[in-house]
Amino acid sequence: MTCLVLAQKEREARIRRLVDTNIIGAVITELDGPIVEANDAFLEMPGYSRDDLVAGRLEWTAPTPAEWHAAAQRAIAHTGDRAALVGGAAFGSRSHRAV
Image 1 (tube, one colour):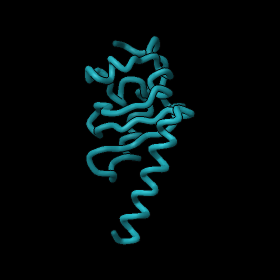
Image 2: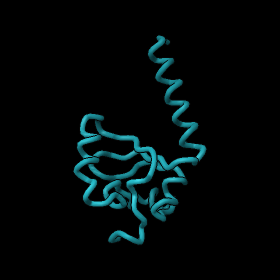
Image 3: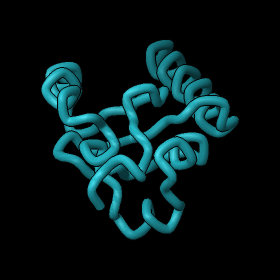
Image 4: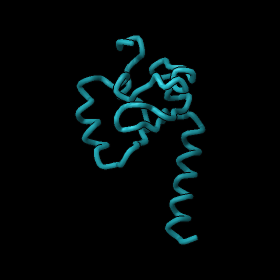
């Protein structure tokens, strides 16, 4: 393997360990809305369950306040088909959004 491939694999492994520790909320989302992967720390912030995730009921736009949608779209516009989001300050409580 080349040095670049090894460096990328090491970065991905570090990120995966961080996600798996559940210290901070992290998700992988399709840019058009669906959340495809989330750790437990993220799911707890807005009050979602793993079943919600598996059933495909989660979209990044649902827990994100409407006034932040445009900024979020601009921030992830150049990342390809998926974006990884870490943290959760932008996510509101499930009880504060329409289901």
